Image (cartoon, rainbow, N blue to C red; front, top):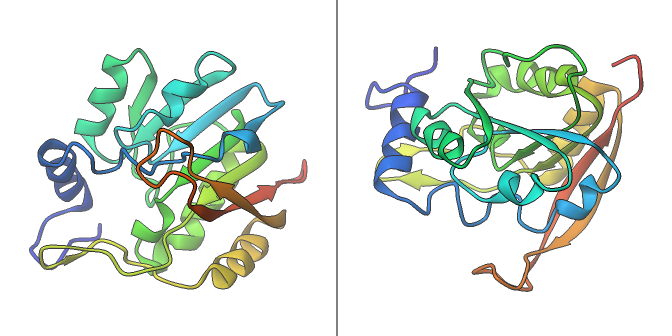
Length: 198
């Protein structure tokens, strides 16, 4: 299992971040990508953090969430969501093709480089039709810790997602909604449409 330079595991680091910084994993998570889920009936949000993304989808589809952080999962459970503790880099506790869509917003860049392909395969294993991702392409530090362990331009991620999943990969322009702190700012989301053989 990966350990940060201070000897802590990812779960320990992200539990502390969620417990001491309420906005961490909340303000940006998935906002503006909801239209990419239209017409589907079920979604699993991997790396849910403490945000409202999944909660806002609950009225129109079956929703489940998971996160490496026990603290984040407790917040989501208190909101009535089906939430589990799970480490994407080690495997997801869900069966094959269990959800039509798997979303993974601002999470893959936190996976250590040697586990990224495995993590992508896990997303594709659980999704029956589509994966929707947002991925940070920049370094991110908290004190002395480098939180984004795999930093590449979006083109690298597009190629990697296509190679690992065999799916059709497209980039969509999204815009942060009105109630968001980054209101009106555009950003890119990646959609992977999977074939039945995935």
